[in-house]
Image (tube, rainbow, N blue to C red; front, side, top):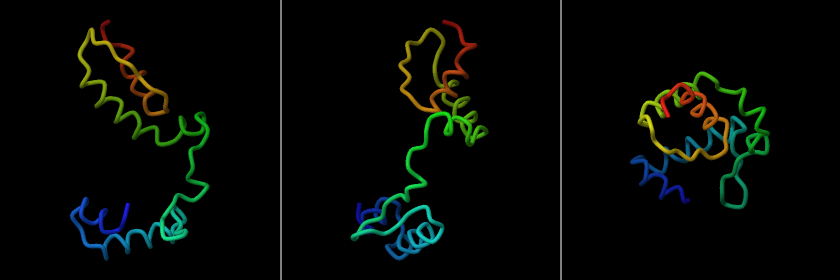
Length: 96
């Protein structure tokens, strides 16, 4: 996605996008490479057991909100992921 497209989508200037990208690159979250921005290797997908133990408060908050949206007796398919595991745990006391 181009800086211009990001700016338009987010309703900000391209200068704001560039400054934010500069900040993320300086914090080693992203790096510029051949005209694009990509995640640094330490931000790549970590093993499940490592992800499952991070940001527990946030994952539980998401899980509670998501679980509250699902009615009793609903059929639900849950994909893989540490946050979706939190949602499944939040649903275990629901009826049927």
